[in-house]
Length: 144
Image (cartoon, rainbow, N blue to C red; front, side, top):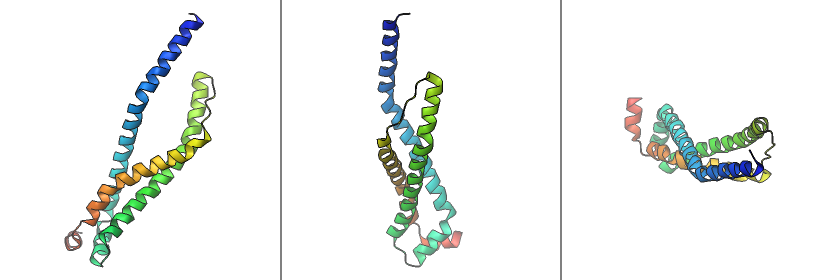
C-alpha cells in the first residue's frame, strides 16, 4: 500500500460520489415530494367537511388552493429548518467519528436548503389542493 495507491483510490471514490450525487438528490426529492403529497392528500380527506362548508358558503376555489398550499409551504419551511439545524450537525458528528476528520458545513447552505424544502413542498401540495378546490360542496356535505 503506497501513498499514490491511496490517493488513486480516494480520487476514484470522490469521482463515484460525484457521479451518483445527482441521481441520489433526484430520488430524495422525489421521495420527499411523494410524502408531502400523501400528507396533504390525507389532510384534505380529513378536512373534507370543512372544505365542503367553505365552498358552500362562497369561498373561492383559489382560497382553498391557497389554504392547502400555504400549509404545505409552512411544512416545507419547518422541515427545511429542522433538516438544516439537526441534519447538518449530525452529519458532521457522524463523519468525524467514521472517518476521523471534521467536515464542517458551510453556513451559506441554510437559505438554499430551506428554499428547496419550501419549493418541493409547495409543488407537491398543488395537486391535492386543486383536487380539494374542485369538490362539489353539495355532494361532500351529503356524504360526510
